[in-house]
Image 1 (spheres, rainbow, N blue to C red):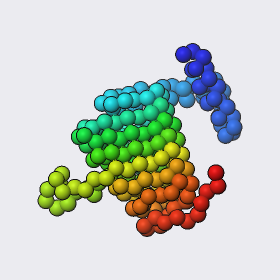
Image 2: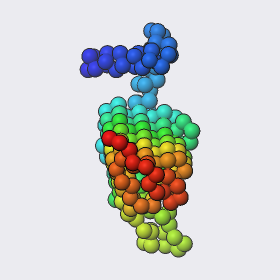
Image 3: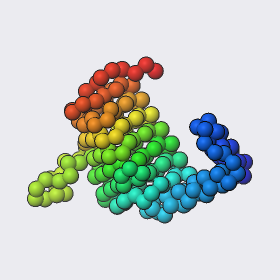
Image 4: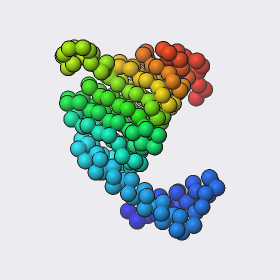
Length: 203
């Protein structure tokens, strides 16, 4: 445990130096305190999570309504820096976010199931919904729900919409402002309304 903590400090100091930022003892102490606080806040805000991984952290207060299963992998970061991160998991639904994923100011609404893979980055003001909100009249019975899958190493820029029933393939990039209504092939860049393939990514 102690050696792991030392490694975390060492890695943080190296990143500070690489980015040309202060890495003196006082600065590092403040950063470590902030990091510990963010982890403790995550434990509080997601205390009703079905599974909470190691070193999950929160920066700024999220809005959460958890009635189903929320699964957060190791080192998931949930920030509300530009907009409040809103997490809604309805009864009998599951939201799973894989390890090392970074979610910032995103609205996620799971009525049946949303799976977000490992090392996924999602920008602010993005909306991910496996439902159509609701129709006029009976909200629950007439609501159409289809699972969303976002595979590993996907990058989703700001102000995107990921609609119900979509699979975003591994390594794909979703350009800013895109509305994704159909599956996205792995290692492609998509953009537009509705989103279309713009180019392939070498891998």
